[in-house]
Amino acid sequence: MTATVHLRPGFVQPVWQGHPWVFAQAVARTEGSPAAGDEVIVRDPQGNPLGRGYYSPASAIPVRVLTRDATASLDGDFLAARIAEAAAWRRDVASLPSASHTGYRLINAEGDALPGLTVDVFGDSACVQFGTAGMKRREGAVFDAVMASAGVRRVYEVSSEKHQQREGFTVTDGLVRGDAAGELDFLEGDVRFRVPAPGSEGGGQKTGYYFDQRENRVLVGSLARGRRVLDAYSYVGGFALAAAKGGAREVLAVDSSLHAIEAGQRIAADNGLAGAITHRRGDAKLVMSQLADKRERFDLVVLDPPKLAHNAREVEKATGHYRRLNALAARVLAPGGILVTCSCSGSVSGDVFLRAVAAGLRDANRDAVVLATRGAAIDHPSPVAFAEGRYLKCVVARVP
Image (cartoon, rainbow, N blue to C red; front, side, top):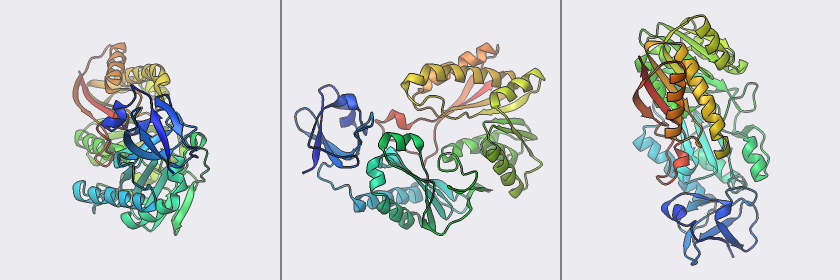
């Protein structure tokens, strides 16, 4: 008998509308004794079924709904069908992969109705990250389905300390299917990337690369011609490379990670751009302050910091950081320059982020006009009722 999670009155509408998370405070009682990773049915106070998902008793989100069909079996066949569907629409709608784009997100958790699962493809390799005990328990079926649907030669598992601690499972970064490769090799546009494989020295952040910014990198490339560009928090230099390929007259890429800087230098050299990009290791805040003190000015500044708010309790502190960062960026931005400023903190709404940007600009005695507000690339979908899935904010502004 499948266990049942009954919701409290007043907590039904979000789930009914399609929000896939059942928060702990929404649960009235649990019928049965489900263990971590078991399938459970979610019902409203009248007993009507709302959906079915995996159980995570130690989490603030004890159920993530995978389907509205309460009679479905969330087994390996179910997961394989969902993964195949995700691969199919990326091919048909997003043209991913293609001859010029061989790196992309295959599974975007809730956006592909597979909460607790993230998969990125890097050419002939895939990296899998589990976020729930339910997905981790069915890892064999996931690995096999990823190989079959994406047509890759190898699959790596990538750990997430936060998820592992919350869900109670253990992961070691490394190869789980196929033959090992020291690097993940893929194309983005006409730029060839090589980043360290999970488990190797210098293995990347998250799954190894940030595909969510792909379309925003294309925009930066189109804006860069003839401009002096600063790429703050550059990681392996995605924005810097796009700017250099777009004809920037000078590019400075700044990151605090030695491994990221070294990888960025290798990638630039591979693409004949070693002389076009200067890589500088350092804290972006300190570097921008030093540049401002020296009266250095850039025509285009890209500000793409790591996540600054991991939950609602950290939003106020994060907005203060965004304010200070954008003030620093404004100090090094030439009159009439373009600011591309980003937040990947899902807890910080777009309006809150824009207010922090505006306050930072005023702190630097600057104003701005917004040219565009953008989000993640097309292979990072989110359910319409799931605002948390639209975590990436990218504001493009002209600063007179």
